[in-house]
Image (tube, rainbow, N blue to C red):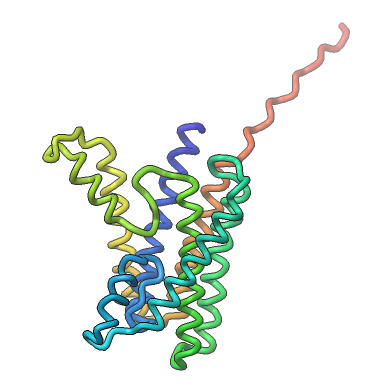
Length: 234
């Protein structure tokens, strides 16, 4: 892999981490306290909801978790025979994520989520999209950037820092991943003021643009060499 391809892959994963923060903020604030990317949060919510504490939701987090697992399984199966690195398969999977989010955004903008069955369907589908994204990102294995969680990234940032007797290697990308998901959550919360549907349309646009740009750097063919001039007789 060339340096340009490696860097473009890293920036693509950071951009997708940013969109995950947006989706989680949109889901938590607009879909009754549900995380569609951070499954750790949903497991914790479900654990507390069992006790009836805080009138926490059960159906939403449970369906998001189920959707995430299905999406991740589909991604794993699709990538089972794929070549290592960024290929046409990974491009198609990330494009599928953007397309799903776009379709959900348009449908939500038209129908709304006031009815609980609609909100739960959107939650499940978003969870599936994020599971598909997470499985594809896991396959690419960009170090310290999973696109959906930052707990392990924070652990590595602290443990490998000079304070933790490490060398501090990789701190830059780890910090960018943490900031990405945090700033993404901020952007998602602000976008939600324009409506849940249009917020998802913006997310989809970023995912699709990121996929197209990254694919160009990963699979772009080098320019053809100029044809040699043939000598003509004197």
